[in-house]
Amino acid sequence: MSDAIKVGFVPLSSAARGILVVFCDDGLKLGPATVKALGGAAEIVKRAAAAAAFKGKSGAALDILAPEGVKATRLIVIGAGKATGLKANDFLKFGGVAASKLPAGTSAMTILAELPGGAMTSEQAVAIASGLRLRAYKFDRYKTKKKDGEEGGARADVSLAVGDAGAAKKAFAAAGHVVDGVIIARDFVNEPPNVLFPEEFARRAGQLRKLGVKVEVLDVKAMQKLGMGALLGVGQGSARPSRTVIMRWDGAKKGEAPVAFVGKGVCFDTGGISIKPAGSMEDMKGDMGGAACVVGLMHALAARKAKVNAVGAIGLVENMPDGNAQRPGDIVTSMSGQTIEIINTDAEGRLVLADVLWYVAKKVKPKFMVDLATLTGAIMVALGTEHAGMFSNNDELADRLLTAGIESGEKVWRMPLGPEYDKLIDSQFADMKNTGGRHGGSITAAQFLQRFVDGVPWAHLDIAGTAMGAPKTDINQSWGSGYGVRLLDRLVADHYERK
Image 1 (tube, rainbow, N blue to C red):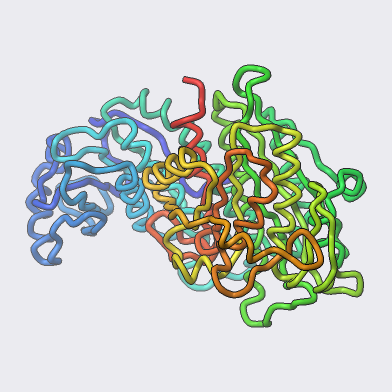
Image 2 (image 1 turned 45 degrees about the horizontal axis):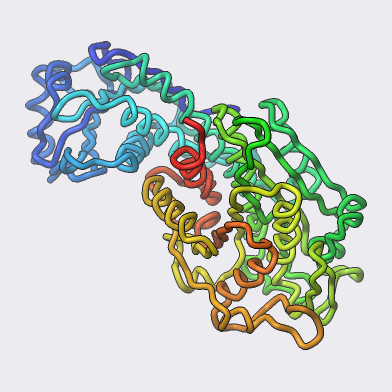
């Protein structure tokens, strides 16, 4: 995997190379090693701060060119705000801010990982390193001509000067694999749909075999044999055949029930016969953000050799409107045997998930299932792009996801389920219909999915607002965010991994 940022860890006393980055609090106080490294230039920081009205606010940056008395091309002071009570997400942000100061081309950067009270912990330094890599990600592989300022992008060799270089290096070995998983998920979402269609998506997921993941790909014939009529109905209008991919990582004891993650993988969604408006339809290449997350997560778990048994399952289809496409009014039979009346062919993601959820519930028998899907525009009306919508039949799982969301910065917000909503998807012609009307659209979609979990502890994450096109942040400047990889890795690490 190519990377714009190469991160290494060195002792705090190491000589600076290239751009020097240091930290101060909201009183402009610097750490002792930082003061020593700057020497007389510490006074320059005070004068420059006064001139720029820089007050050390968290995430603010003061950029000083060719500072006198320091062997550095630039001195960048990043504010840490109040230096007490800082969280891991603050250090991710600091890394992102540092990466934003890298110029186009190749350069070196040294970051003194020290706060006014002394050296940062290894975990804090690792968070900075992760933030650097996440911010530096760029998807421009299809550009043959670059505009001014785009040439080559920023590439850097970064030295993080820390109190314990050995401990930081060891900690980053695992954290770096999680970053790799996020980058994989971003790449999937950003790829054009003529490149990343179901068969190619499945082929790329198969590369996890190199890490020891068992990968099984179900083709159309295999899915027909299993009775996956809901999933196959979505893809029947496409010239690209559908696929389901089952990925298994066995990092715990043999026979121990796995945790399971299910992803919606609609590689392109026209809406089918209920075709979408032309405006912004190109964004529907990202309608496989859930499947992208699951592949990225499985990479992270396997690469860091997580002590957990985990299964990732993704349903991969294209929703296209040719003469063989399913129609409103059609009735399909799912793998569960339940029948579904198609009201709107653009409510297709829940049909894909229905069969994959049932497959996992019955054949894998997991401790729990979490599905991720860019499922409804309604969730964006409710929550905007700051939180994913979470629906669950299990309070313990929901609470753990809420906590993991706060810790990782990939936030979720719990939404309601209930029989009053469930009856809205009852059909007069089949067991259920695939939409429940305009009101509460994200809720009725979740109620639909709940009919296919067979009582397994389950959570559904509607990531329509967070997986693609979400606002840019200090650690993500990409259209595809890779949302969910860090969230679910944290969930596994905190609650389900053998210690």
